[in-house]
Length: 427
Ligand SMILES: Nc1nc2c(c(=O)[nH]1)N[C@H]1C(S)=C(S)[C@@H](COP(=O)(O)O)O[C@H]1N2
Ligand SMILES: [Mo]
Image (cartoon, rainbow, N blue to C red):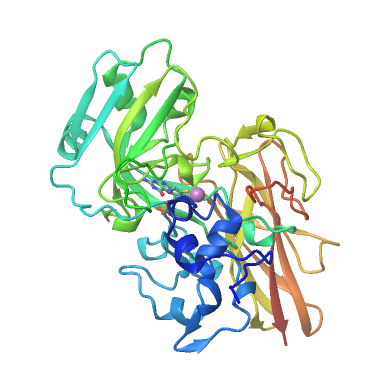
């Protein structure tokens, strides 16, 4: 009998697994294909044992016993969701620092790691509709432009996808595809000014050195861009430093874009080229349902015609509880703390509830250390009697936008900004 996939369709392990189609299907693209890629027919084994329920493994999930044994150099405590491409998120309680250490910065790759990620000989090309096309080494960037250091939050557009119902295909991120490290680099705007932006430019296009998953040099794993107005804002950096050191290879060494407040996919890693365009970019992961959502609210499960999708721009208001950890034991009083952020806006307040949203107490909230950083907050809570509690956090931004209780469902599982709930056993 042939093995069957989730939907009961027969498939051939050898051909279906290795076909170009399969390799082309990245976790944010094709649900049934990535799932199949993972199933490997009926043959999935862990440490030599068959896995009877492997058909229930969500798309892209690695059996935990494998993932546990997999070390990511220079990373600490990340949960591996997928190993080809590498995708790993950070448990919320490991995101407790005001500035995320490099070892705790999540990883989201669409392709493979470039073979050489050293700064030696790396160049960045700036071309398209510019007066003077540029080719800059990292030393040129450091010498010819003002070098700045800023704390900037990056969140994957699919963070929180794991909670979609009906489920959405792609990496099943829970909470931890977000981070706020300190990035050192030059302003994209200064480099574009040097190149001379022509008046017909409307959009950027970003290219990097990471090979496509198939290994085919003619294919590009991802090439996204942003409207030129966004590219010209002061907190969009071309970064060569991360937390006072070189970039981690998995976070784009030696050079990357950091576009805070917009989907992480705008922050191109292993950056080699920025092209200025007179039309919206149409590179891989710019079109279809990639990083796009319906232009209007849809009922869960709705199929949406392609022409009704719009490109995601700013990320919505959101917060994270980083202490205590979900499932922790607590005394009758505890400090609750975490971060909050909202794309292109500041957070006005964070409120905490310990009674499932019936009443709220306002947390102490820090101003952002700079435009594009997340904001840290904390408050002491006292519990009236011992028992099970949930701490809920709800951020409100400068435009009055507030985190919702329920997911604003969309087909690809983007922009989940529902409140973070942390369960506590109090005694
Ligand atoms: N070249 C390149 N840049 C990339 C990606 C990629 O696959 N290749 N992934 C993007 C996505 S989807 C996200 S969310 C961020 C993640 O950045 P990080 O891996 O440093 O956390 O990188 C973006 N930049
Ligand atoms: Mo992403």
